[in-house]
Length: 89
Image (cartoon, rainbow, N blue to C red; front, side):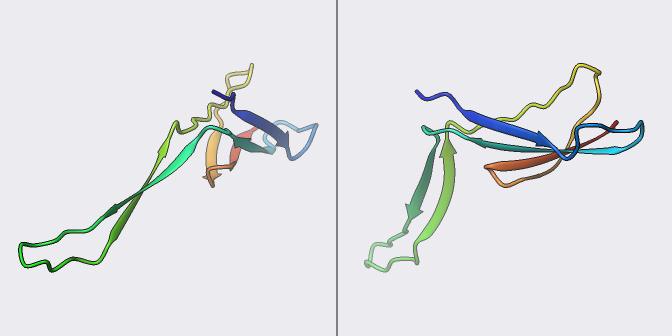
């Protein structure tokens, strides 16, 4: 199994107390597998429903953000490959 890959960047390198900090995290995992399940219902007369699809991910990724000051990082968005977190300096 491959290890997940992650990069991260803050929107600045120096902050004044009270400034908003924005952290952008880009992540991926080569062995995460999307899965699509298709369902069709057929009755005794051979009549079938339209196909319905449901998506799932095998081996999903979980992000955890902490820093050494105990600051709370709040997730603003997460596309599944890029996440943004905010905190106050």
